[in-house]
Image (cartoon, rainbow, N blue to C red; front, side, top):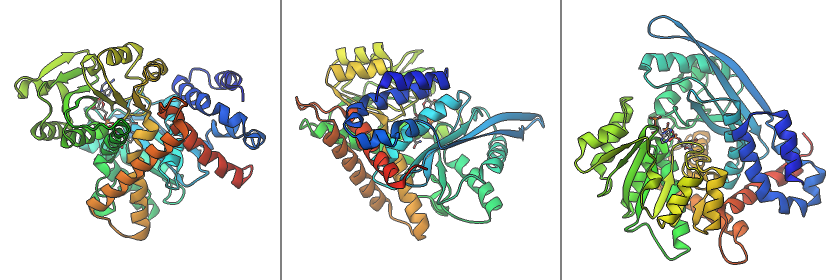
Amino acid sequence: MNVQEIMNSLEAKHPGEKEYLQAVHEVLESVKDLYNENPQYQAAKIIERVVEPDRILTFKVSWLDDKGEVQVNLGYRIQFNGAIGPYKGGLRFHPSVNLSILKFLGFEQIFKNALTTLPMGGGKGGSDFNPKGKSDAEIMRFCQAFMLELWQLIGPDTDVPAGDIGVGGREIGYLYGMYKKLAKEHTGVLTGKGSGWGGSLMRPEATGYGDVYFAQEMLATKGDSFKGKIVAISGFGNVAWGAAQKATELGAKVVAISGPDGYVHIPNGMTNEMIDYMLELRASNNDIVAPMAQEFQGVTFHAGKKPWELKVDIALPCATQNELNGPDAQKLVDNGCILVGEGANMPSTEEAIDIFLKNKILFSPGKASNAGGVATSGLEMSQNSARYNWSAEEVDAKLHRIMKDIHAACVKYGTQPDGYVNYVKGANIAGFVKVADAMLDLGVI
Ligand code: NDP
């Protein structure tokens, strides 16, 4: 495989899809040596096939807002690769959503899902709908209109969407309600459901907890732990709050959380009272970050800034793609940061990753360290199929086990001759081998 040739051909076919091309480039760089040593992959054109989605559905979503005005959004579902199981991946509702972003997320999802050890293929979907500032009734009408188009493509054994940015428990509820009405069935077609109607306990906190469990494993390779560590986290959404809660529980001091408009510095560390306060604001669709400084003494808001300027031991980027760039990475390294554990998908730019790897700090890519969310979704699918519920302790124990296994797979494939673990390479190779071997077994389809 010649990475540059493949990238040139993809750029010609998909001009301007920068996030998608970035994600593909990262994986190809990691797997190229293994690929070139395995002629069976080349003969079956695994790379040429894995970089293109199986299919993409694009549709129009028309709905009425509270003033009775017609609104029109775009909806998408990308079924990227189903070699190892039903397509699985979240729905993102955010004005920035476009095909490039969903293709990058779907592509990443293939290898992430493979890493979980559960039988799930990769998919992603969403809409450019902006849930911010919308009433509950508007969110419901939008979700119903979205599902009216999507339902025929998905199913508990074909494609199982979940949440992502802008899609939490409330949206999953409205989407599931409409699916149930149309399909006339009560099955595990969506994950992230309410625990009273088929959802798995622990799913809301699973991605953040998993991110911290993975970081715990990385620290353990150095004989270290979270105890007493200073931690900065970005965002305060589905992923970030779980990470903040678990890191605090393990004895770390979480000194920053952020939003698109800036970050709050909490010199004495977050308390459970602060976490509860922010969860309340979040549930009521209010701004979360800036009000923290008014509510709690000693907390300061830094408008337009990122938490990566602080002197911290651990950084957990949990907000969005490309939120941590080269200069941010350099600042973290210069300030003595020892670990960066991605909770979001591709939050670090390629330049930032190069800096982390060059300086040999512990760095985990999202497809490994945020896989706890989809892994718990996989557990939810199992519970739905079996018509059974595990306790929170059982789910947490399985999640913890899966994160340890993913860490072990990264170490197996990513350890360099000098002993440094390149988790990016390890995750990409471990995920790729599983999918590529399944594609070989299934023939050219
Ligand atoms: P949410 O929408 O729940 O949370 C995102 C948070 O990040 C919000 O607080 C948002 O603020 C904030 N934010 C957005 N842009 C920025 C920015 N540029 N700088 C700082 N903060 C910002 O999304 P999720 O927590 O679900 O997802 C976060 C990331 O994790 C995404 O990359 C997603 O793909 C990934 N992920 C999510 C999983 C899940 O289980 N939900 C599973 C695996 C990965 P505001 O609301 O004000 O915009």
